[in-house]
Image (tube, rainbow, N blue to C red; front, side):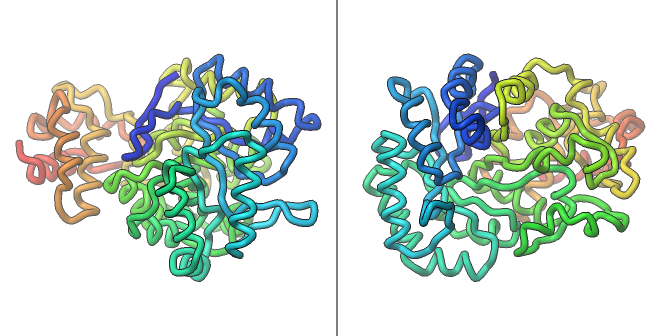
Length: 382
C-alpha cells in the first residue's frame, strides 16, 4: 500500500480508503471482516458518513483494541432521528448526534470531523455564519476532532469553503464524467442521463480550479463516488457510453491535484480487494487515456489529464508533474512557495526541454506540451 500526505494535516493516509457502504450489508456482519481485510492490506482511512446506530456500534466494536491503526473520518450533522438518517443544521441535534457518535464508535476522538453534505451556497452560509462551524471549531480546540473537514458535490460551494481557511480536508465526488459538469445545487444532476447527451469538452473549469486550489492551500481531498455508484463500470449505465475499469477510475481520481485517498464503497470483501489490487496493477491496467479517447460524446482535447502518455522524455523530464506545477502557478497568478519547492526538487526541469516534440506525438489529447515547457521554464526559471 502506498501512502500520501493528507494536505497539511500531517496525516499519512492509504491511497485506497474504505467507505462505509459495506458496513450496512449482511445485517452488519461485514463490518469486522472489512476492517480485518483493510488492516491486513494497509488500508488505514475509513469514512463514516452513515448515522445508522447499528453501523456505528459495529464499527466501534470492530475498532476495539486497534483504534490507532485507523484514521477515522466521521460526519458531523449526519444524525439518526425517528429511525432514519437526517442531515441537520439544528445545533442541538448536531451536538446530540456528535455525543451519540462518539459513544457508539467507542472513541473519545475523531481524526477528521466532516461537516456533512453542503451542496448549496445558502447552506454553506448557514454553516459558516451560524453555530455549526463555531461548534466544530470548538470541537477541534478541545481535541474531540483533530481536523475539520467538509463534504460536498458542488465545486462552487467547496471552493468557498476551502478558501475560508477553516476546512483542512474536503470530501468530494471525483470521476471523469462528473468532472465535465458545471456546478449544481442538485446532486442528482451528476447522474442525470440528459446532461451527457450533448458533446462535452474538457473538465469543468470550476472543478479544475477546486482541485488546484486544494493542492495550493494544502487541503487534502478524500474522494467519493470514484465509480459513479458503479455506473462507470457498466457500459449500459456509463454516461460516457463505454465502461471503465476499477483501476482506471481509481487512477483518474488519484492523478487529480490535491487528492490523497479514494474511498472504495466496497459492499463486499471481493470488491474491497479489487480496489486494493490497484496497488499491484501495471501502468497499462491503470491507463485511462486510451479509454477516454474513445468516448463518443466526451472530449478532453488540449487539456492535460496528467496521464503520463507523454513519457519517456529523452531528457528525463517528468512532463506530467511539471505541467501540474505549471497549472497550479498559473491558477494562482504567481508561484506559491510550496509549489516552487516541489518543482525545485524534481530531478529534471522544464529548461532542459530540447523541444523535440516526441511527447506531443504520444499525447492522446493534443496538448501543446512544448509550449507548456517554455512557459514553465519562464515561470520557474531554467
